[in-house]
Length: 263
Image (cartoon, rainbow, N blue to C red; front, side):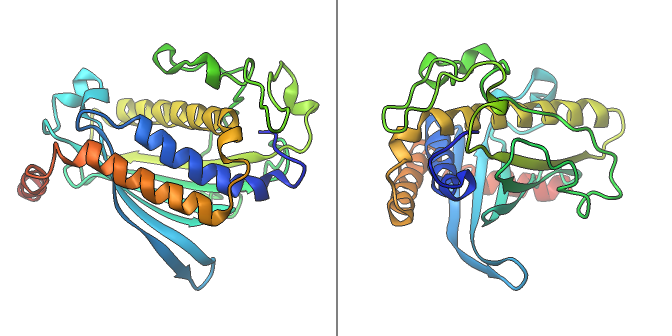
């Protein structure tokens, strides 16, 4: 992703926070979407100062029919994230499905995806498949397409960036890459392969859409300070929680009780 007149990774620290908050708000409606449970500073002895966030992601209607058949009507995934930008850790789990988990480690670097060894320490014993995501040229699901968020058509008024063309990664400077190490586990015989492949596809689509939006929304966050984006984040969390939580305030305890009984 191409950014600014300074190192792209430094600038994207604000763009990342803005995109996640706005994207979550847009994707939340009629009781589904993202509820922010906790968002506060966190200090790690190894990684230093960061931010810890816990969310509940309600997504029953977005599941395929074969998955909806085995989960409660009101279903959510718990997401916990530790942001030590430019390194982040995200874990997703579900109390109703104790054998299901998603673990994502992210590293941001100022290059075009050329660091093939970036996760050698974290994944030295894992079998890996490398997947390149191109925010300009890869297709997204039709229901999520907006011309205003298409990097091939979008042109930034504040920065002059945009209207990316085939081969843009070889011609744009500065440039950055968001490296993701995604591990999906669903240890249930008969469903493991199907579920893990489905989740990997969903994660890929979310990453593609989110990073396209971060690029296309650059004029909205480009002039923000860290204080500005934290205030925006706080306001978006409050508005999103209202959209999501009113539908679930009386049902979450029932879900947890159901999950404990099932396990």
